[in-house]
Length: 220
Image (cartoon, rainbow, N blue to C red):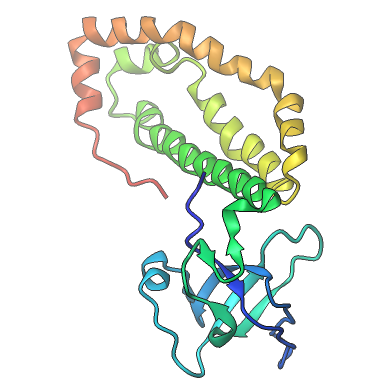
């Protein structure tokens, strides 16, 4: 199961004290979004954090399914006794929490995988369309990459959005995969064509050297 380092328990009832704050109850689970104005959450900060007076963090009520509840709260109502175990019990023992955490891990993994796919598209496939690319590479684009672009688009534009749509409804996650079942045939097609691409690059020194010389493009 994914790390739950950015989930903490509320240690006392809290009534919203400003328009951008939220009311919470003792025992609520909240996801830390920001530790200061304009500063995104850092796991390192939370792990070594020692509460100070007058600090406020931006949080989201964990597990809410509608009208996402989030806002600024004082840090003194957060339980820092342990990231996963506290006076309120082990968060990992809560079935709903485990389901939500598993789905979130799935989404984060899919997002990372999608970025890697897009990095391949940006670094290699788009380079083939440039004027400076060897003709043998341009003419053999379909042999080398097959339907890789379609797969990258599927993960970046379709699958990830489907998973996010049901992110707060773990029991509905399977519906995304069932609805997109036939789209995964794209992966079968690519796997069948991949040996041909490997053979082509092995036999064509010019093409092989061209791709090795392409500068690294960092994934966004």
